[in-house]
Image 1 (cartoon, rainbow, N blue to C red):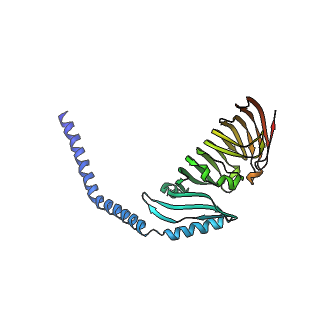
Image 2 (tube, rainbow, N blue to C red):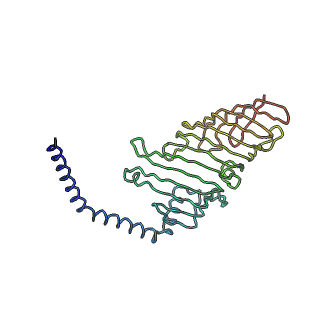
Image 3 (cartoon, rainbow, N blue to C red):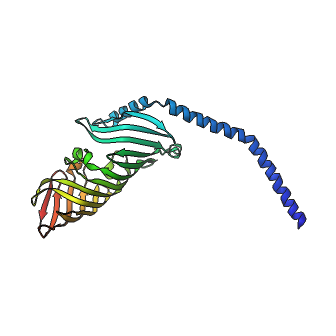
Length: 295
């Protein structure tokens, strides 16, 4: 027993000796590699070509999205590896007023994604008193190139954002929080699959026409649960609650390339506490010209 233990101890000692030799040989190289990485990062940080990056982004946007203007005040490298841009604005060339504006936006690439040939980035933006976080990944397969998108929104003041006014012709007010997921082929966004859940608090939604004497809907909370499936946006839940009106709606929207021509097919009930009246409503027509009917 003693001999066996001594033999085992001797074997472990030999392995410890070999490991020490290996570490002594490779330890300097590990130090050199780490030193090289550190120096590279420092030089990138100090000499980062911010002006060149801004010019590249503007040129790429001009090529891929000629109807949009994308501008930013500055761009610099941040650690861990990423790029931080400030005062970013997106506007339509036909309407130079900013559609989207971010105080700052930080983009970080995934090294593993680029090594595997499927680039992915994470994004964090501070805008309209809130934050937007997103992860974007592209995957190349035999079926083509697809994009995976995962977005979360927290405490964004929609009243300060002209995006809804530019797209839908009406400015929606309220504080927005929620999430969005999407997966589809690049260039055909309405053909993809995805989900949208959001909560909008303390705001108003202007109506395209007078409905029962209301030109706008004031609300305390709007809750939604939406599912996108190949050009059909299924409205699983759309609840509106407020002092003037409470409503519950379900249905679908058949999407078109021109989003304002998307067909509506919603049904629900509306309760008016002050009027002590409850009615059933269907909403047809298009997003640009919705047609309500009451029962």
